Image (cartoon, rainbow, N blue to C red; front, top):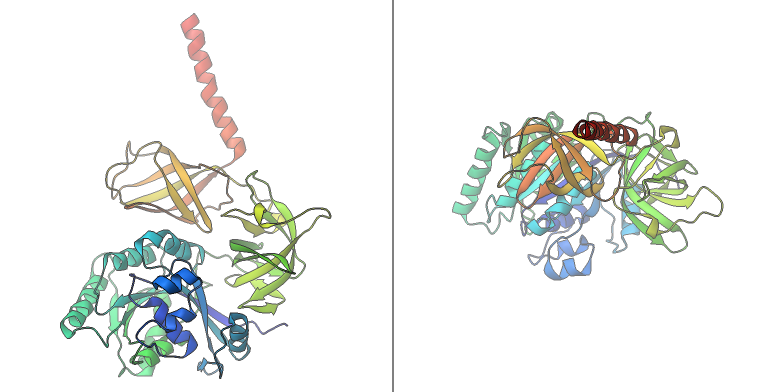
Length: 463
C-alpha cells in the first residue's frame, strides 16, 4: 500500500530515572491517563524486564498523529498490536511525531547517547519530576542536547504530588539553569491556563534554538497535557537546517540501527535515511563488514511507521527487507555488526581505520595522553578508539581544545568529515567532529617515511 508522504518530526524524551518519561509517552500517544501506578508506561516498554522493574533500558519508539487541522488522531479502540495501531493512526494523519523514549538511569547512558547521536531527533523534551528537582542526570542530558545543538523544552511532571516548596524550588532552579552563562536562553513557562495562540508563537520559534518552553503536567490528573499536546503538534520539522543530514538529491545513505530475521520475509534492517532517497528494488552496498568490504544487496520492501510504502527519503525512519543482489550469495544476521550502513554503489565507499578529529574535553578526572582508549559514538558507530597523536598539547585536561589522531581498535568504519562524535568513559566527556580521514594509502606512505630514518640511523652507526 502506498501512502501519502507525511510531515514528520522526532522528539527525544530524556531525563532522570523515575521522572515519568515512559508514562508521559504512554499518556500522550494512547490518549489515556495514568492510574498512578505506571499503567500507561506498560504500553510503551519493549521488554518484559522493563515492565517488571519499571525502567527503560532500550530505545522505545511511539508515534502521535495529527490530522490536517493539527488535531490529535486517536483510534476509537486501543489495539495492543502495534502494527495495527500504528497503521490506524497513520491512515488518518497528515503529520506524524515520533517519540524516542530514552533511558534515564546512569548505567544506560550509553544507550541514551546512541539515541541522541544516531537517531538525529529534531527536539528534546527533558523530563523533570517536580517532586525530585534538577538532578545530575538532568544536567548531563541537557549538556548533551546543547552540544549536539538539539533545541529542547522542559516538562515538569508529577505536579499533582509535588510539595509546594519543592515545586517552587524546582521551577526556580530550572529558570536559573536556563539563564546561566553556559545556556543563555529565554525560559517561557506554560501552565493549564496558557493561551493556545501564545504556545503556537513560541513553538514556531523553537528551531532558532534561543527559547526553552517549560510545561507543567500531571499524567494522572491530565493537568497541562492539552497545552503540551498543542506544542508538540506545532513544532516545525528541522530536516532542512539539520547539518547531520544531506539533501534528497544526494547519494543514498541509510544508517542501520537494528537488524531482524522475519519469518517468511528474511533479513530486515531498521534505521534512518541520512541522505538521498531509496525505492523498491534499488541496489545498494551493505557494509563495511569485519573485512572492510561491502556486499551488494537489493531492497525488496520498505516500511515507514509500520506501513508499506514505495520509497523512503532523507530524515525518515524506515525498515528495509533485503536480499543479496548476486545469485548464490546468502545474507543472514551473522553478516551484521554495529556501525554498518546501506549506501549508493556510485559513492564507492572506503572505510577508514584512522582519522583526525577536533575535540573539546568537557571533563576528565586526570589527564589523557598518547594511548588513551575509550568508546566513541559517531552516527550509528559505537566502537573503542585509541588516541595515537595529540597535535598541540603533551597531555589533555578538562577544558582543552585540540586536534587528535584516533584509531579504531576492532574494525574499519565508513566516516565523513564534519560528523559529530561523542567520547564518554566513566566521568570523561569529550565532544568534537571529524576533521580528516586517513586512507589506507596514506597510512602506507606514513609507514615508509618512518622506516627510512631508522635505516639512515643504522648506516650512520655502522659508519
